[in-house]
Length: 298
Ligand SMILES: [Zn+2]
Image 1 (tube, rainbow, N blue to C red):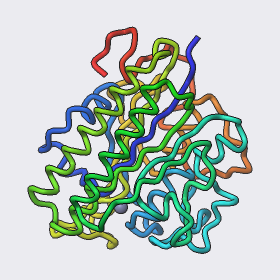
Image 2 (image 1 turned 135 degrees about the vertical axis):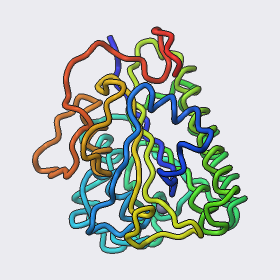
Image 3 (image 1 turned 45 degrees about the vertical axis):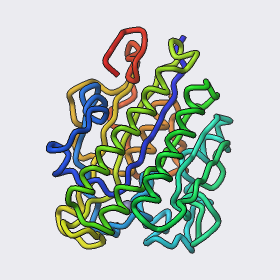
C-alpha cells in the first residue's frame, strides 16, 4: 500500500539555456527519472516572481489569482488558493510551505501567497544581499530536510529557494550566478536525501517537481518579454510520469494541477484550474522517484 505524496521545490530565476553547462546532478536525476521541459510564460503574465509563482502554486493564471507584480494587494487567493492551503482546508491533508521571500509567507506587501497550509515556516534573510540569501536558503533547506527526514506527516510541500535570483539581480548571470545555481542543486540534493531517509519511505510514493519562475538577462533583471526572460522550466518525476517523455505545452499552472492529480484528487470544476496534469492520471505500478526499494539512483 503506497501513500502518495508530493514535494515541489521552487528555485527563483534559473535560466533554462544555462542548465546544460552547469553541474546540477540532482536536477539531472529528477529529469532522468521523469522529464525536464521548457515553459513559456504566457503573454498576459508579467515575467516577475509574484505572478509566476502565484500561477505555479494556484494552478490558475493572473486573470484569476489577480497577482500582477511583487505586491500582492488585490489578490483573489480567497477564491483561488495555493495547493498547500486548499489541500489542508478542503482535503484534510498535511501540507508545508517554507521559504524566505516575505510576500509568499507573511501578511506583508499584500501577502501571504500561502494563506493557510497546515505548517508554515518563514526564515528571513538577514539582509538584501546574495550572501544573506544563500544563508537563508541554507536554513530553509536544513529545516525542510529535517522535517522530511524526521518522518513528519506531510502529504504535499513547497520549498522556496531565492538566492539564485538575488545573485542575478546584484551580479548578473556570470560566475557567481552559475555557482549559485549549482548550490541550489546541492540543496535540492539535500531535500531528496531527506526523502530517502524517511522512516516510512518504503510505503510512500513521492512525486518531486522542481520549477523556476522566469529567466534573467545576462546583466541580471527580468520583467520584459525577451526569450531568455520569458523562458522558465519544470522538471518532475513520480509514479504518474513516464521517464523520458517531456509533456507537450508545459505551463506553470500545470504544477498545481499535477499536485492534485498525483495525490489522486480530481479537481472540482469550481476550482476552474487553468493547468492540467503533466500526464493523464492512470494507474501504474509505483515508481520510487526519490529513491526507494527499487534501488533507483534517486
Ligand atoms: Zn523570480
